[in-house]
Length: 126
Image (cartoon, rainbow, N blue to C red; front, top):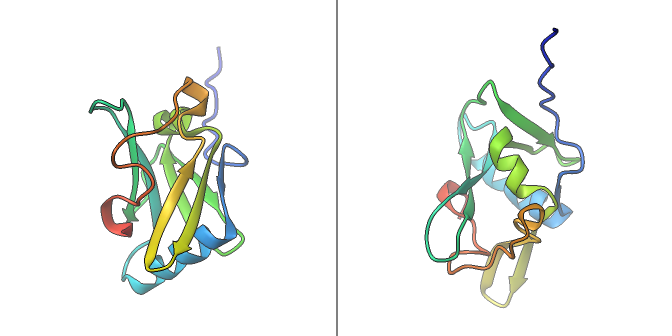
């Protein structure tokens, strides 16, 4: 029985709009020793699963990686990727309000992704 190779490349499981990729790339480029952005999923709260983003200094062995046309590296661990399949991350500006918006979050799990903290970047990308 042979071992199954771990495919660490994200192709179309997660979509990042050009506006979001450009904004995230600008944030990453402002920081020293940052390789990219991690999208994570955490359990808890009344809304079920929560998600967010943070900076990545060093990738993990089991990270899946998406590289955008803008050169942004996005890291997601394999377990979180199962929860995020079908998500689209966008960046919106409405007047003085600016935020990253996650659309179709938890679509693969039958959830809406709606909760009190959704729609904003968590961690270091705020």
